[in-house]
Length: 244
Ligand SMILES: NC(=O)c1ccc[n+]([C@@H]2O[C@H](COP(=O)([O-])OP(=O)(O)OC[C@H]3O[C@@H](n4cnc5c(N)ncnc54)[C@H](OP(=O)(O)O)[C@@H]3O)[C@@H](O)[C@H]2O)c1
Image (cartoon, rainbow, N blue to C red; front, side, top):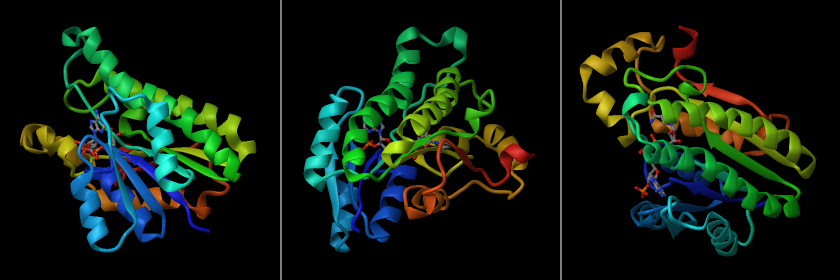
């Protein structure tokens, strides 16, 4: 059966790799981000059924965004929320607006998108929701203080468990994918500074950062038939970072 997916933050980084993994597995995929066109044009040039939804998730009505996706795709089976923002500041320097901005995009948006997507999945009797956590779901954060981000990523585990329990009878599986350190634009400020990146790399038993595709391969499993008996879980893909 053909499955259809909405991937937020699908234009770059991990979200883009996940969208592409789903497309190559035969899903039709809409990506929602501020600038989705380049990624979608590249996939379409290969004949892959991708749709662009230009949207700033910090400003957009997220219920309306899900409705747009469901209309473009003719339903909705899979939601992946991978849009990302961060403010790297110690708590004493972090304004309430900065705190709210990070909490909104990672946590509030996850709830609002999932709430809007679930009825479509329930109608199909089949759904997969994948939120993006992090190793900071389980730790105090990285070498630079990121208190709002860490709070959001930990809270997402609670949301994942609550929705997994509530929506299991509807055929919907809800999981939290927790990457370690991945080579994306998001981590450039850390990767470009050897004083920050060196200790991180030294703590990764596999000795290197992940490529987005390595995270996406696991995401594709969590979004597929293979995850039928897998819900409410944090799935860590970190090269052994947390085991160190
Ligand atoms: N990279 C890592 O090491 C790492 C580790 C653990 C967890 N994660 C998590 O993985 C997820 C993806 O991170 P990433 O590293 O792939 O980030 P990234 O490379 O910076 O990509 C961020 C994506 O979010 C979109 N985006 C940002 N602000 C948006 C907004 N206001 N409205 C709509 N879209 C927006 C961007 O697209 P546009 O510019 O087109 O809007 C882009 O597609 C995030 O949840 C992040 O916290 C990342």
